[in-house]
Image (cartoon, rainbow, N blue to C red; front, side, top):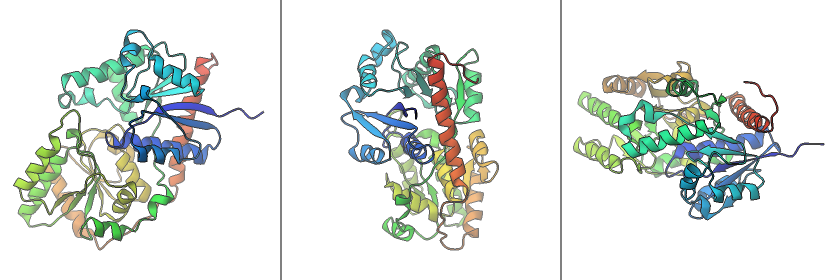
Length: 394
């Protein structure tokens, strides 16, 4: 008899608030459908106010089910989960949907949750860069991670770099910990958009660098502004096309600060912010760019780097551990506080560019995405086996 597919719950992650998290879900579900068809049913629990287009895009992936309830508008059951050990509204929804495993992503449903759970901790940024978090936000994250650890959750991390951080921050944690490296498989439908048309739509030059990061302070856009200022003084004309949300709940005025510096230094033609653009446009601009630029001070596992790797796009990256881990040295690197080094890389890469090159998905990308699906599947299955008392590999 063929075993029934495992049903796992994942709460909807808003692309507007965290594009990387949304893309993680979308790519994960697509990878499972392609490489492990019929073995898993991802069930997305979303609030009534969730973005209709985002939900429709997830629901269109084969095998994905969507449940929309007010219990998932914000976190109305968090106080009960912390104080009484159970978010009853969420638990009832999981039971009704016959969920086998819950994946907690920036959520906690209580230590009395009667369903095995995996806590996905993308990164420990609040421990590495505490100055970028208001005190309440920092402690909210810390308490959330600590209660997940104390509740015996399986911990899912996205990189060996994050694993080192986890062991340093929580040396006494006895939880089972798994590293599941994210990989992207751009949907064929997203590659039908002509990059030259997208470049024209956004009034970009033929040669440009692409920076698709949300405007969070740790994403380090200011360093790019400083590097462009250096290049302007050198008489070097470079264009950065940036896209992504300007909304940061931790620091609502950050985008305005960066934008005011761009205007004050006369860099409006060099730094072009396109806003939040459709994913087909993101891929089109990435495929035709001189290089991907990611100046971030911290990443758990960079989605933009994975997307660039999937097309073989050259990369200019901040010299942080996880970028080295993801690229194995196959990029240009600069210090997170070194605008001169970044300016040098941009100038050299710009001079080496010879017209637009439209790149396609690289060979062997399927191997990376398949490994992502298989490792995630193993984490889910081991969590279920542990809950029913079967021996698991540690």
